[in-house]
Length: 334
Image 1 (cartoon, rainbow, N blue to C red):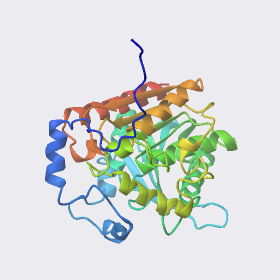
Image 2 (image 1 turned 180 degrees about the vertical axis):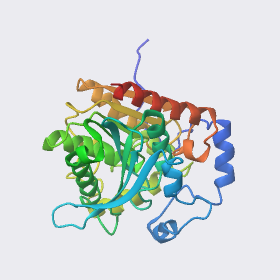
Image 3 (image 1 turned 135 degrees about the vertical axis):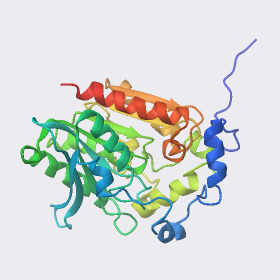
Image 4 (image 1 turned 180 degrees about the horizontal axis):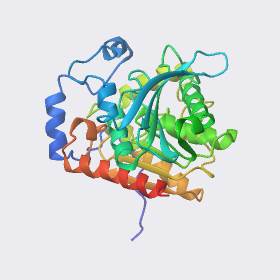
């Protein structure tokens, strides 16, 4: 008998992995509020305040006075406006602390420096970390390289002012979810290539890495769950315009385009089994290993994109948050 390989699959019309029952129930409840496919005409509406999801307040971020919370303007990229950052510093620290430079999610088109910041403050409270969260400019009003250069400017400010902030410049981690995870990955590449910063690590939560948007999982999950292939086209096109998917996209815009993943700081990458970004995130971790680097990869079974935010009490959500905290604790241990 002759064995032959099956034809290459594209993911189009492929069956989807099942959602975790708790995730499926939440998606059912959210079906009328969050469409799977987001198109450019929806961006203004998506940016409207949502009373059901109010932004984190300074009081919440302070954790009953455990952190001093300030909003500052720091020098932006050359020729660009200053960048606003939210700075949360532990009040009881008696020695320089490790820090997280946080880049928020939102598909490059929505969100602000407070988006996703409560989980980061959970890490900070547990591990006595400082946090700097970046209010980068959004696409399409500010295309690449504006957003990532805003984040890099905030990272440079953090490093150069580490002594005044009480931060240990050798223990800074870049972290973000979704688009913020892609920006954090890009910052790790930029820091390696420019030589200004030696990062301690990169924590990438279901990161948005590949503008080509053509993986098996991107096709497989089209029209399903949260942030599908159509939504992904919307976000990437806002950032890159007509260059999206073309031959000349910078790895600082789409880190999956990087041809060399050697020399990067240790990475934590997680993603869900039932979302658009699954295959590009698994491939990114694989390529870090192939380049001799260090990466911890988790694929959470049955999760949708953002599952830990939509269903915080689900088992996989609790396990995902615990895994991120555990990795940070081990990475930043004195």
